[in-house]
Image (cartoon, rainbow, N blue to C red; front, side):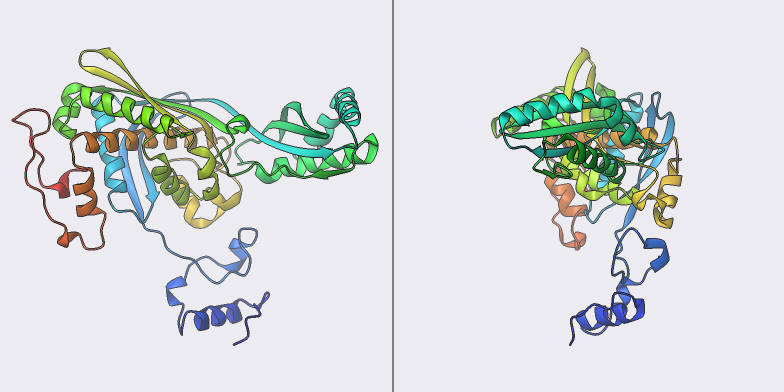
Length: 401
C-alpha cells in the first residue's frame, strides 16, 4: 500500500485512513467539513469524539462574570464531571464563587546574536533609541494588537527583545508572532549589528515562570462548616490541613504548581471550548490556599497567573465550539475575560471537591465506581467513620453528586 498522502483529495484520504485502520474509519465520521476546518488542520479525514458532560450549576460573582452557569466539560475520565459538579454545589451552598481577572498580556520575543558583548550592548541602545518606530511596526501588523512594553535581556553575545501585548479576545499567539517578526526584520536589516536571529523565541507551552502570559485570574469562596460536613462528610479542619500539607510536600519535591489536579479540569474545559490544549502545560501554574475567617468559615482561593484562553480565532469558530461557548454566553468579541472567570471558578470547585474526597477517604472508591468502564465490577466499600461516629460514607456511587 502506498503511504503517499493524497493532499488535495478528501475522499482518497478517507480511503487511505480506512485502509490504515484495517477496513473502516466510520467512527471518524463528523459533521465538520473540509472547508470549515481549513486553517485548523491539514490532511483532514474526520474527527474523534470526546464525550461532553455538564458541570454545575455554579454561582459566580465578579466584574467579568455574574450569574449561574452550567458549564460543558469534555473528558474521557469518569468521576471528573461529577466531582466538579459537587465542588460547585459546595460553593453554591456556601454563597458562591467570587472571581476577578486582574491582568492580561501575551509575550513574544526574538533572540538576536551579535559578534561581541560590545555589539550586544550597542544593539540594545540602538533599539531603545528607536522604540517608537518599533512600536509602530508592531501595532501596524494587526488591528487588534496593543503593545504594552518592550524589554531586553542579555545572555553572552545574544539579546532577547520581548514584546508584551494585549490581543483583544483572541489568544494572540499568531498575532504577536507576526508583529515581532516585522520588528525583527527591521532590526536585522537596519541595525548592522545582528549576525542572525531566532524567531520566535521558543517559550510557548512549557513551564517558564519568568515568562508568564495570558490572563491573571483570582477565584475565591468561603466554605461553611455545615455545608462541608453534610455534603462532603468531612470537616473544615481536615480540608484546611490537607490543602496546606500537600502544598508543602509538593514544594519539597520541586513542584512549580501548588494545586491538586488543575490539569484535569483545565484540559476538559479547553477541549469543550475549542482552546489550544497544549497551553495546559503553561496554564496549570496555579496556587490554592486557605484562610480562616471564623470558627465555621474557611476561605479557599485559587490564584492563576497564567490562563491563555480566547473566544475568537483558533478553534473557537468551528460549529461545535460555537455551541459550547454559547452555553455560557461567551461567543465572540468582549467575552474572553468572562470565559476566563468561568474556567477559574470551575477549577476552584474541582480543587475543593478533590481535597474533600481525599479527606473523607472517598477518592479511590469514587474512581472505582464512576471512573471505570466496568463500574458494576467495582467493590462497594462498607461504611467508614469520617469526622464523628454519626457521619458515615454512603454507597460510593453517589459520593460525588
